Length: 292
Image (cartoon, rainbow, N blue to C red):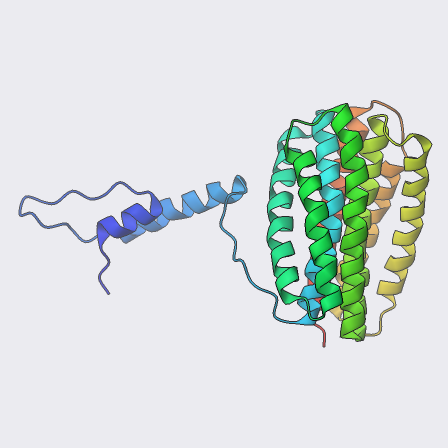
């Protein structure tokens, strides 16, 4: 099949080919376009601007996964906000905040449209209302100490509703796979909640309450990780990934227990280790989602 050179050039941002002396446009240099298109795609990916497929929810396990991800994002966005306010890993923190806001927005629409019962739909209507206020606090102005107090409060309000929706969907599924998707998905949230609380405490928010909540979340994470490791439906691939999480948890937990105030190095360690464990848990949730 012959390709129009200038059509593809416009698509990939390659300068159009000029007509030759006979007025005809030469056949495009495929290797040039592919090479330049590949470079462009890589640059977009590095900048976090690569287009993503907006796949709709097709089954209950996928719904539980996305509902649980909303739960996680409620905490991850606050974490990123607190990190930006304290100049911690600012480039990555801004990217995390921007992509998380966009993902939360898109998935909320999908979940509201998918809701299999009126009660579940009502939960997502309420979540949508709470999200409007939370999003305004997150992106309406540059992070500040005063704004951080509002973000801390609203992040928990959004978490409560997102958790309710996830639990309702798990109950509706009434399957072991649904429970495992929810349980593993909650580990994602806990990883971000602990990091959020750590950064909040470092910024002077929450006083000793934040530390108590970190300790509670640590216990819940450890208990759930043990339960997931013993799940009879685990495949060899799941076992391997759960073993990796145990190793990552060792370092993440160690960082969480070092609570020296105003230590940018420790705060950065919490920021990076929380993202690593989140990435691994995302893969694990996806594996459980495929179980029947």
